[in-house]
Each structure stands twice: as structure tokens, then as C-alpha cells.
Length: 372
Image (tube, rainbow, N blue to C red):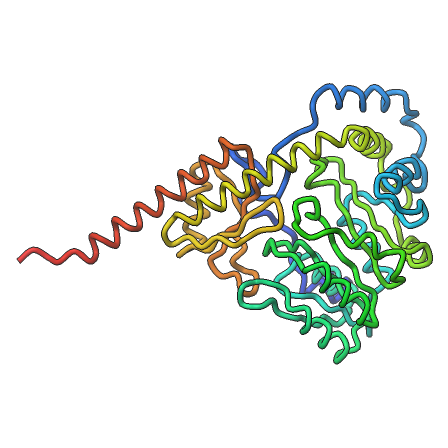
């Protein structure tokens, strides 16, 4: 009798679930994947496509998208050999983890944090060292430094601003961690354009153990193009590049990035709009009884409600898709939603306010004395 096919696979797969998006990816108002509400204007898409049409489609692209890497290095003001591009930051995560982790290696992950970190670490059979956030979901930098030394970890990954909490590590605390920890430190800056804290890219030249991860899916509104970058010192980057999949970035993505960087005011304007709406949403949510809203350094907000699952399904049935993040540690009954267009945000607020009115009326009726 042949063995069960699962016995022939990597045993780490037993502890890994398939990635899913609860509620799907289609809705009248879609606020569940932290996307930009702004698509690229048609005139810019036309310019990209006009250039792409001239490309030979029967030929492989460059092994790495060198032209886009040159453009992004110039945009950041860092040396060209400190930058590598990938097919989305998720592919870059796999590449970095492959280069840095394996059986016998230890990775420190604050929790809660981006779920893909744990998934890849489990797949590579690395040992995970967790450091919980503080009760208000802020980072605990002293605990991170202490635990890293105590456990002699090899690798630290920090999502800041953090998904799913929306909180940032202070720049000074990041400097401490990178400087004091004898480990490679990966700082995932997927949401940095929305943060009150500055980027740590300026530290790359000083610290050989620092890697900065960037994505073009959030502020740059290119989630569909799959563009990510890693920035590190050339020696470390050269090692990271060894497991990198060749030819993984398309010429279309490369051309698109170059055009967006030339018209970066579109990004700046969009970020300004999102930050304004984030502040307005925060103020409105503070006024809704039984809704606790957390301060955010990202393009999304976290609220804690009485029953997250019930509110999630009510919103979904109204055509509004948010993310239920209650399964994360310390985030019971929490929902996450990105900032949308003003009309979308108003619809969400309306539904949340109506729901709280219904709850208050139900409470009032329950407490009302019975008739004699």
C-alpha cells in the first residue's frame, strides 16, 4: 500500500493553513485589504502601456529589473547596489527568510504581527521566539532587546507601522534594537508613508545587520502590479539575492514603477487625502458608544466592538467588506478597515452608528421594568 501523499510532503505543512480572505475580495465597498482607494489615472496607464507595447514579449525580462532598481535607488538617495526588487514584498519576504532561516535558527516576532512571518518561519523549521505587545497593542522595545539577547536569536522581524495593530515603533527604539541586538533585523515599512515616525532607511549605511522592506501596494496604489523592494548594505544584499527567483518581476511592473516615481505628486496627494480621512474617521468613531478606536499610524483603523463576528457579517450583508482580526493575540473582538473614499467612509460610519443605536435600544428594552 502506498503511503498517504501528505507523508511525502514537508512535515511543517501540518502546522500551516492556506491563506484566505474572509468574505472574499469583491464588495460594493471594499475596505479589507488595506489598499489605496485611488487607482492610477488613465493617462498614466496609457503612457505605461504605450511603452510596454514596444517591449519584445517573446524575450525574458532582465534577471533582475535593473532599470526600476536604479530608479528607486535614486528616488531614495541610496546606492544602487543597496536595492533589490521583487514580485511584491511577499516574494521578498520568502527570499529573505530563505537566506536567513532554517532548522536551528531562531527568529523573534512581536505578536500580534503580520501572519506571513510565522508561516514562512514554520515552513523553514526555524524556532519562533514571541514577544507580546503591551496591553494597548504598542511595541515593547525593551522586552524585544532583552528576549533577543536571552534567546540568542539570529533574526528579528519588525512590522512598523505594524499590521494588524496600526502602531509604530519609535525611531529611537528601532535604532536601539538594530544597534544592540546581535541579529539580522528586518524592518517591514509597508505603511511608512502614513506614519508619524521617519523611515530607518538612513541607518542602512551604518548598520550591516539591517534590512528594510518596502511595498508599492499601499501608498503607491500598485497592489495589482506586485512590486516590492529590499534595501540593505551591499554585502548583506548580495547574500540575500542568492535564493532570489530570477526573472520574477515583469517588464510591465518595472515600467509602471518608473512612471509613478516620475509623477510622485499623485502619491503625495493621495496620502494627504487618506491621512485627512483617517483623522476624521478617528474622531467620528470616538463618538460612537461601545466602539473603542485605536490610534493608527497606517492607512487603516482598528476598532474593538462587543461582537466582532456579528458586526462583520452585518457590514458584509450591507455591501461593506472589512477584516475581522479577532483571532490575533490581544485583539479579541477587533475589526480592521482601511481608509476609503469619503463616501465609503461615511457609509461605514452610518452602519456602525445605526448598529450601536439598535444595541442601545435593545439594552433599554431589556432594562425596562415589566408592567404589573
